Image (cartoon, rainbow, N blue to C red; front, side, top):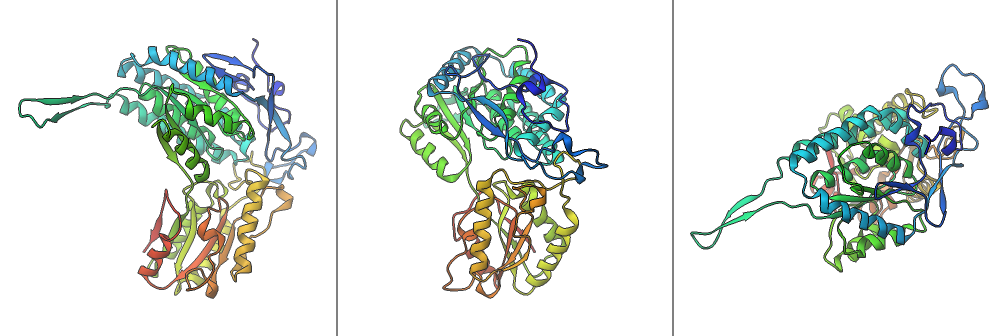
Length: 469
């Protein structure tokens, strides 16, 4: 098949020209072959903040007004059935029977080749991430580099997959252990770091000698497709070592069930919401299938009274507002000692106002982008409204920047004040018990170390914690 051209796939014009148009595809990758869904079914993917070509000439992309068609369909991709997922798993199993015999050094050589190919195509990968997700282009580069750091690390670990010699109960016996690849790994990746998470899960599995069936989030399938396109270029992997299946929100549960219940899948790796993770883990538990789960967080960020407040502010800017607050390790609850909370809020607002640049996400100077969907906007608005209704003071933000598109929710600062969740007999604000997953920094006063440690560990939390003293 002739190389696909940009406009054959992308339905919107963007201010970027792909160096390698073949990375743009709409098909699944099963058993080493690119194939549309057997039924012909597709589902739409919506591009974010893509300037229209008829805006005229602007000195800077920062001056471009938001696309009034932002959120419209950017392309369509295959919508796979459960039967096709089963085929992908079977292809992975067939490849595994060959790939598991590869020596550690041979696996390392192949992984190095893939890493080099990914690195050579980082600009196009970043552009696809920006198109699908609306990440500022500089942030998309960071995401790609983050993924590359995993591949670099896995290369070094491959030849250190040693076994052990263990003393046995009987004096003249020894127990020898070796590490063997498990088999087919089903990997389900999230939308917020689509390149990095695909590289991390696939890289770890193939480094260990396993094969993979990758299911990307419905919001960012093109990132996974591009990753597989580059994997295909490495000479030496058996066909079916990496497979990519695609599905929209409606078909994803059936795909997940097949991955959980198919006996050929020996390990399921999932990054996403706690609710979905619980379900997948429960289904895998029925057959004692191994799992790796990275689920939602509710990270506390604690600032004690003797902290360097500017350093704490800079740390909060980095941990709270990167990716517009859409990572599972973002600070979610910011506890600040009551004696410095006013000064901290003032410094945070001043630093925030001079830190973030808004505009077209294709402009390298822009460092703050839109949320991934209306659903994300609605959840954040609900959290802010709930906090204000319970006495929180809105210091900054708190409303969509309409001139920058329907999904640009600006950095928002709240101070809970005397009606704080840290005070007795108060109904917890939603951000205390739910992950906001957006650019809202609620400042919560505390008075003692015991008090704040109790609050930090009160509700469901995980993945990260931060403190400054």
